[in-house]
Each structure stands twice: as structure tokens, then as C-alpha cells.
Image (cartoon, rainbow, N blue to C red):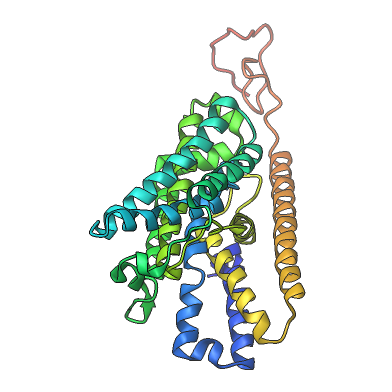
Length: 357
């Protein structure tokens, strides 16, 4: 129990519960009403999916700033597919959008892995490229709710046993990615690459292949988030997803995923997403102005980064102390002298007679 409470995820969960508790005390409808409970679970669903994909990329010591643009492009693609083929099954449309997102993520990963250009630079560029494609394609047009099937739009508000469908989708994505990271060889290799990419390459790990997979997964989940966005809001314009990349990175950092790679969990990233959006909903309820809402989020991000550095330095000092407390044996390995023993006169390193004391 003590080890669970020491985890970063536990602290984030407690902070989330505290925000919900205080806000509910001020305004009971925030949680206790049917709409309040639904919004509490539904509002973070899209950001949770994006944060899970981003966390995988950040674990490898990279970042993908294009996820907001990928969401906007795939959301518009979803609407255009329904307009072009109204009878197309929803599953097929979703798979096409996910595949498109994976392709866009793979483009990012290919440049990072093969050209060895920093991911921050590449994805900042593709952020504008993908957004430009959406602007060129959509122009001043937008997808309206009447252009999409009612069954698809129903997914944005439909509930199963009181839990929104989109929240269930986000939970399934979170569970699947968490299981992969913590049980598969590929997942462990992602952490090794993020800890030290050069050492991982020297150990023979498939660094390029894992980077491609991480970026493709992040893009695929951004594509899925685009489908969820279209279902949730029913209207898609060329500006869909603008600015979400900053929310995603903030959620990942607040969730305890080290921005320098090699540590963190997707569960923490999901909790970070829920905490940020719950704070955004809670602060207006308690009468906090919009300026302070942004300031609180900024303080959380700075505090999370500072905490990561403190924990990393503490871990380094602990490892150094353990190493100094257990120094290697001072006897040469081939001296022929057993620990605590005395070699007889004339005994050399090749003397195989047993030495007695």
C-alpha cells in the first residue's frame, strides 16, 4: 500500500479528487447532477486518447507537436467520407481515419529516425503543413451535423450503464497501450531507448523501428481522436483541434511522463489530461477569472517538470551512494591470491597449487 501511495499517479489522482470535492462542495451540480457526472467523464475522453499516444512518443525522448493538426485533418476526413458515401459503415470510416493518422505519424517518425532531425523541429513544421492541408481542403466550408449519420452522432452522447461511449473507448485505448508497454519486449525497449538512445543502439535494439512505431501509434490515436471529435461535437471546420497540442503535452508532463524520456506511464498521462480539463471546468464554477485558469495550468506544468528533475537528481545520488558503498575488490583478478590469503614464496599467477593460510 505504501508503494502505491508513493507513485506519481497516486498524487495526481488525489489532486483530481480534491478538485472535484472542493468544486462539488461549492456547486453540488458539478458532480451530483446527471449532466455533471456525464461531463466529468466525457469531456476529457478525447484528450486522454491524445495523451496516451503522446506519452508513448515522449517516453522515447521525443515529442509530437502535430497531433492537433492530425486530429483536425482526420475529423474533417471523417465528415467528408460520410458525405461521399452515406451508407459507409461507421467502423470503416473510423479505420480509414485511424490509418490516415498513422500515416501522418509515420511521416514524422521517418524524418526523425532516418534524417536524425530533432522531433521538436520536425513536428512543429508538420503541425503547419497538416493544418495547411486541412485549410486548403476545407476552405470556408465545414461539416455540419446534418451531413453525418445520426447513429454516428449518437456515439458522442450515448451512455452504457451511465458511462459515455467515448469514455469507454478512451479506457480501452488506455488499457491496451498500458498492457503493451509493461508486458511486451517492444514496450520495454521504448523505455530503454528513451533512457539512453545511444546505449540502446549499441545494445542492438531496433531503435529506428521502435521510433517509427511510436510515432505511428501517436498518429493513429490522433486519428481516432479526430473521429471522436466529429462524433462529440457534430460540426467540423478547418480549425478543429487548433492549440490542442499544447494541452496534450501539458497533460503528459503533469501526468509524470519525463519530458527527457525513459520514464512515466500512460495511466499518469491520462490522469493528467483529466486533471487539466477538470480544473478548466472547475475554476469558473468557483469564480476564478479566465486569466488565473491559464496561470494554474502553467504552474502545474512548471511544477511537474521541476519535480521530475528533483526526483531524477535524488535517484542519481542514491545510485551513486550505493555504488560507493560497495566498491569492487582491490585484488587483481589474476593475482593468484585468494581473498584474505597469502601466496607462498615463489608462487606466480600461473601457479595452480592450492594456497593455504
